Length: 106
Image (cartoon, rainbow, N blue to C red):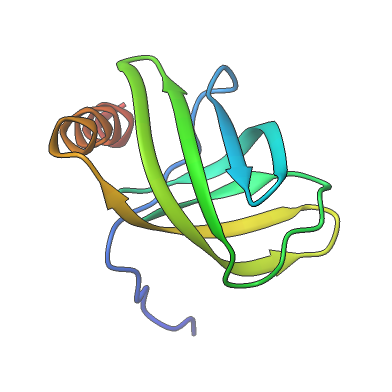
C-alpha cells in the first residue's frame, strides 16, 4: 500500500527540449529538467549547490520563456537539485500554467 500523494501541484516530465538557464550566487549553468510543476522543478546538474540557496531561473518552454526565482530544497548527489519556485511575474506564471495544462492533458 502506498501513501497518498501530498504534493500541492501535479508534476510532469517535460519534453527533452526544455532547458533551464540558472544562476545561484556566482555559479551559472544550463541544465535539463527531470520534472516540472507550477510549484517547483528538478534541475539535473552536477554542480554543487548549497541547500536553501536562492536561484534565478529562465525556463525555455515550447510556449515561451518563463523567468522565476527559486530556493534549493533538496540535493540528490551528483544528479541534481529540487527547487521550489518562490517568485514569478503573473505573465510568466500564466505561461507556465498553460504549458503544464498542455502537458497534463497530453
